[in-house]
Image (cartoon, rainbow, N blue to C red; front, side, top):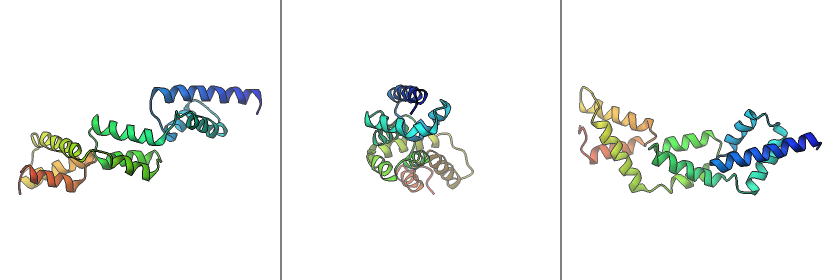
Length: 160
């Protein structure tokens, strides 16, 4: 490796460390940044290995933070969270493991709150249409349609 490549590698490591220290990120995010920063592809693996070695890059921690954040702050359901993580090419078993850590009571309570909020403003010709609109809305947030229907029944919202 010549001096120029060595300097480029040092600069890439420093910039990547700074980036990872400021926020959790995954390999997919880093590769996009490397491209933006014009880091030569032949250096990517070495920088990523360095980041993993010093725990700047940790897939399990990233997935855990992502799941918690998207659920608590964005009120996304499991389906949408899983899809977003899959798009980042993260390991399926880690995704499942972290999704299973979500508290089921809190998950259902969040969904109930969202359903009640949506029910307050939904318009439709009949209860079936209103229920369908609520189910579609909750599905777009990543909640399981069967669970939405179960909550609609439990809460006696737009009974059919």
